[in-house]
Length: 261
Image 1 (tube, rainbow, N blue to C red):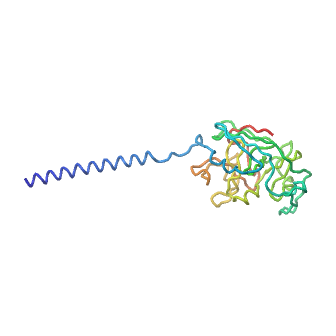
Image 2: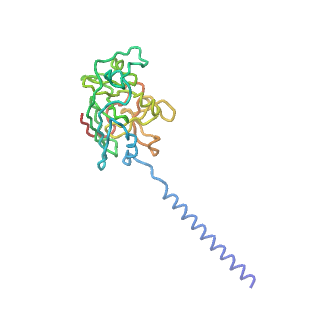
């Protein structure tokens, strides 16, 4: 009888061990299934970044299905010598460019509209950026590309007309940034989200993870794919750098939405 009890106990112990191991294996399989998927380029969604554009006097936006439409008066929320002298935001030039030369233009209200995809992805066929607005900054001022004038000459002496926040107006009074908008990087940081280009991909400042980005770190379109503070699973994005082409290279990485100006 004693031997029978030992055999019975051993059998029960063996059965219990099998059940525990089986449960453990099932639990591990569930853990593997529950791991988050890696985001691919078709999974990009910029909806979470839209709140960065809230409460901006110059700017409003609305979401319609898979697109967002921005409408801006293009009036900067910072001082400039290009405001009329009666404007409270008028301020004489006090920047660091010893060759500064004010152009004859002034800032005036515009009506610019961008309709941009909320799910940007790489374009099969890339398109060049046009003269004029190519994107929208988070304070409502438009981004221009690296060219100046009807002959698409790269920025050279025109840089000397940029105000203390590195923007200036056109002959039609359209204020814009070609290079780093120092009002925004001063306000939000050198690695901050600065706005969107018309293809829906974000624009960031000249630093990433405490390191200054150079053109060598970027592709022909002046961007790359990596994790950002706003997109922890990674996203393609542009960077503003201190050397030409500054903001955008050989065109839009994605498919540009519509721009009315």
